[in-house]
Image 1 (cartoon, one colour):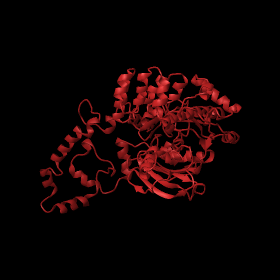
Image 2 (cartoon, rainbow, N blue to C red; image 1 turned 90 degrees about the horizontal axis):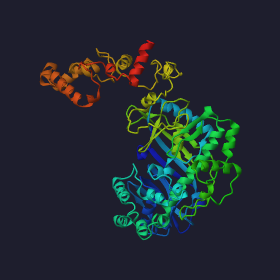
Image 3 (cartoon, helix red, strand yellow; image 1 turned 60 degrees about the vertical axis):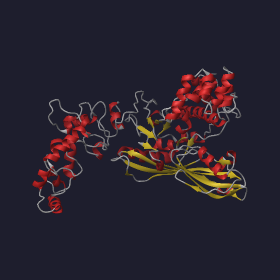
Image 4 (cartoon, rainbow, N blue to C red; image 1 turned 180 degrees about the vertical axis):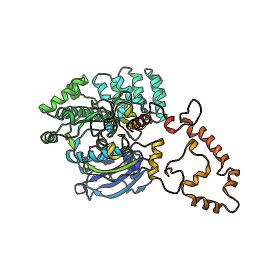
Length: 589
């Protein structure tokens, strides 16, 4: 399952409250549509095009870099701008008396394509769609808020609260990232090698990121706090503060959800900042209580009620940090501010289009999902909830968000420690090797059927979405194949090995009439025997084709020790899921 596979797969459009903003005034209002750019980069480009300072550009909120996003920005003064290229489009939509504010946004509408789906994935989307429409889901902050974790920096604020200013500074400037550009990672590696030699680092980073930090440390070797305040941009510090503040909020809501949801209805979603508990269902009274509950982001300028204080104290006890240390944090750019946030969210206009053939992942499907969310809510979280397992003891699942893989937590909320992101097997195979099963598959202790496979696929209890191989595939093709051929092979199966006896049988796939037409097109005297001698369709061509196959795509096919050709089933490893499924079917028969 994949999100954000291409830029066209993720479309966001900001919903503007026109009545509160548009009118006459000195501010120009623009609709910005961007591809592969952050909001900061788009604002910089707009300020340069209008000929104004960067501070003259305002926007209601940040939009994702991965996708096609549309949002409104205002510019105070400057010249009119109309611009269009592949990365960004700037279109004027009116004037305003003031700069745009976050309250002028009524939220965002989303159109998201989910790719690499099989039949059971689409079934889960339909089941979960009805649950989300009825009861919503917890309003967690999702992975986009925790870029510091994805890029290896960790929570910088946590280091500051523990008094480790040097560790926080080193993480900000030199933490390696698996997603960073090559030249950036080389530069950070150079800083790591020289760390502690401030004079060498001052020379190494001259006129580059971190130069002012190391200039300060060269004169004041122990003043890491001063270097942090002088050498790191306020915007970057604020982003790291929000990341840790959001993490604390997520943990507090997770405690509340686990306390209110019965064990049989509890499920989990993957997240970079730790698994997130959600519910499949809930008693109406408990759902109303959770829906009415407001949990603010923690800050010193708010009075906490008893329940909010209890939840946050539990979180800080687990962190090993006193809550007062966070409330009293007084470093420029790291001063927390309170903000109210609802615990549940309800996507509006939630719907899914019928599945289509996936043009990128052949033999897979894609689905287009549409919905609207208020400002500050995360669309990827909704997609994860729609793809979530529908029952306990489900097979292991993995979702890719752009280039980033996430494995689903198990029923205890734990991500398998042996996750291998280089493992390219389909998740249904990986899941069976861990003991998980999908609906319709035999369980780990026997052949008990769970009610899906026999009704929807009829292949001896295997999941209805498993692609048959070998003899099963040929037998299935006897019922589906096109007429006209002596071999009765299915028209979609390409023969392999000794089955592909010579070129003459290829005509049988489309009927003998096609052989006659080919001979007529080639002209008189060019009959099949002549072509055999020239190697066009005959044994010489077959030998060349077989040699290439052994050197090419068949090099990974297991070979028998005696060198003789075997059927595809016999060539399968004995411990493979497909061989096990074949043995189960033979036992049933």
